[in-house]
Amino acid sequence: MATYGTIPASSLPSANLEYLSRAKERIKDGLGARRPWKLMFNIHSLNFPRTFSEAISRFRANLAYFRMNYAIIVLLILFLSLLWHPISLIVLIIMMALWLFLYFLRDEPLAIFNRTIDDRVVLVVLGVSTFLFLLLTDATSNILVSVLIGAVVVLVHASLRRTDDLYDEESTGLVSGPSSSS
Image (cartoon, rainbow, N blue to C red; front, side, top):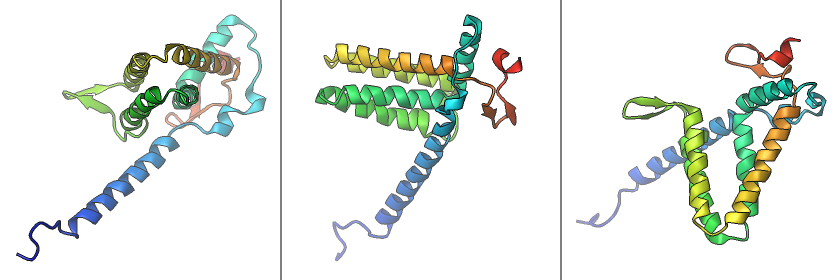
């Protein structure tokens, strides 16, 4: 009866340490899956496209290649715009936790009812739900302006950045696009 009401010390710390080490490893792996910032902001890879179709081609290729980086940039802009709206910031932090576990830190594809959900679907659903939940917090103008600024930043960068030096690890080659073949 000497141990009545106590929690065994051996099971609690080891379970917590294992969970924390797995979470730390997943954070490193998940955020490590994003493309290098040096590659994204390489000043020598920025120039104006010659045609509108080249700009669209660059936009599509860069959006696919730097998808996680662009999501981080838009979320950072949104976070900075909500610093003076505490309720909206709390909602954003909760949604960012969902972003971390459902998008950034997953090791394997998300499966619901034995169906694999594509990363793009997860990205769109999380983006729309984050946007809608934040609109319910009465910070509509801040949210709309910050999302618009984020979209403009992504559009400008993705259109101006050349795609001829983007390396695709999965196919062990350069990302192919109409602008990189000429």
